[in-house]
Length: 290
Image (cartoon, rainbow, N blue to C red; front, side, top):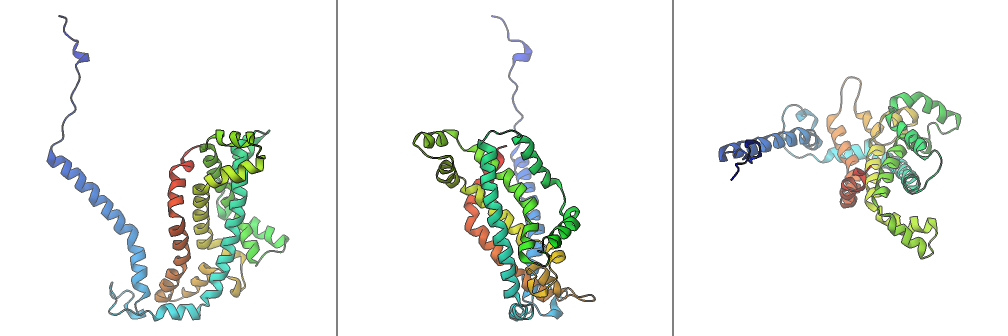
């Protein structure tokens, strides 16, 4: 019999000891717990500050008693219902336009062949690489020229550039992940091209649409720089610039600021809770396919 060469001998993996496995698992849990504490501390501090009185903000971590009057004070003093409605209008209009453009445009980029398709798509992606600060002055001049400066509709228009580019990228990737056979079968049955898009692919793209809605809703609702620059009338300000009034030149009303931020979080959290299942599907399916 011929002996096997030394290189062909299978090598055994070193078996880690139980103590080593316990130590590695413990370190993983320690790191994860530390990350959770770091990420959750600002939110916990904000929640606790919202129910403190002004003398306890930095004097103690836990309030001596729960003071919910801060929410009522902020609601009336800052006229939050008006500013919440302003933000709701801007966010709804922005998300509606971006969803309409990204779904139709993403489907066209994914399924149609036309001259300059790739160049046009990469040009759209280029908008994602331009920081918003670089577009602040040109956008100010543009809105002033078309008469939409200091206007909620104009503020919504200013959000469309970068938001539409990202949504196009996401929806194109999602439509590419869907099988072409579905559309071909619908065409054989006599469906028009729009019918294929509307009745076949659009219902299957709900996870991608939910992803776009959540991300764009959060970005628009929380945006501060454009909303502060393009809106000067106090009654037209959205929620974030309105809450900025709690920060004075020499002092800051942290209880009012924290209470207002908690109230401003509720719509965004509600949107996420409603669409979270579709959002997770969209992020793990079509959004990961190029």
